[in-house]
Image (cartoon, rainbow, N blue to C red; front, side, top):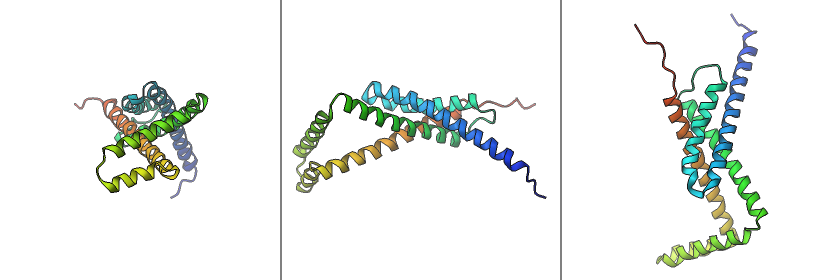
Length: 175
C-alpha cells in the first residue's frame, strides 16, 4: 500500500530542516569569519567555535532530534565553508580598499626567496624559482586557498562534532 499524501509532508519537513541547518551554519560562519579576522592565527580557535555555535543554533531552531556527531560535523563543515568564503571576500575587499596588493606580493616574494636561500638542494631551488614567476605565484596562491578551505572545514567540523556530543540531551532515566 502506497501513501501518496505523506511525501509532501516529508519533503516539507526535510526542506525545513535543511533550511534551518543552512541558516544556523551561515550565522555561525559569519561569527567565525569575523573572529578569525581579528588576528591572523585566531582562526585556529574561531573555526571550532563556529562549528560548536552552528550545532547550538540548529538545536534552538529545529524541533526534531538533537543532531548526532555526523550531523554535527556536517553543520560545522558548512559553517567552516561559509566562514572561509566570507573571510576570502573580506580579505579581498580590505586588500583593494587599502591598496595592499604590492605589499602582499612583496612579502610572498620575500618568503619564497628566504626559503630558497635556506635550501641547499638544487632541485628545490628550481621549484622556488618557478614560484617566483607569475604562473608559479598563482599556483601557490591556489594551493594556499585550497589548503585553508580544507582547514576551515575540518576545524569547524571538529567543533560541530564536539558540540553534538556534549550538548546531547539525555533521555529519561531507565527504571
